[in-house]
Image (cartoon, rainbow, N blue to C red; front, side):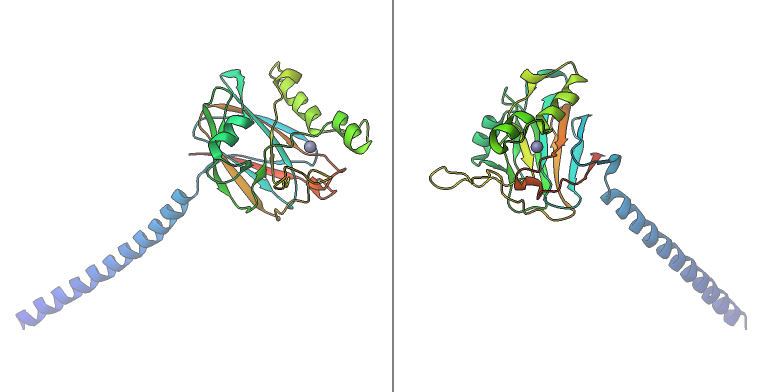
Length: 244
Ligand SMILES: [Zn+2]
């Protein structure tokens, strides 16, 4: 009788322990799942919609990542960056292209400065055709030259608005990157009559650039309607900054 009671008691205790263990395991699994979700999400510290045709600027600190989202697809994004601690050092297209052995920016590309320092690295790119590095920004002057369209706003004007905040100006604008823009170059070196052709990015495509130093990023969400770089209808973009 005594032995039966002991056996029952131990069995009950085992069942209780088993039940507690199950609850504990369930708790652990649920929380591990949550922890995994949280750790897979980087720390988003900035999220902003930039209207069509508008400028934007911000300092992106070393280690942070800037994601540029082409919200509606086929929208050109003119991009420049400067060493935030020495604005005389800036993005340099020739050093970037010589290091990449390619005229287009893609995942893995490093954006070099005129001092040949790595400024930013392209860590993600959902597009497949690369991004233009040679056609530069539009401006009211180039719109008049190319399209007989004087007094139309361009990316150079947007760059100037942003640079003025940092006591910088015309002399600080260098040939920029045109994210989500396609500029075909043929074997004989020729380009298209329109220079830009319609981009291939689709809604939600994005590129990410990680800062390798503290950088001042200047962006113009291109207002161009005279060539196909924005498909004739400039649209908003979204910018997100993540801590590492
Ligand atoms: Zn433009």
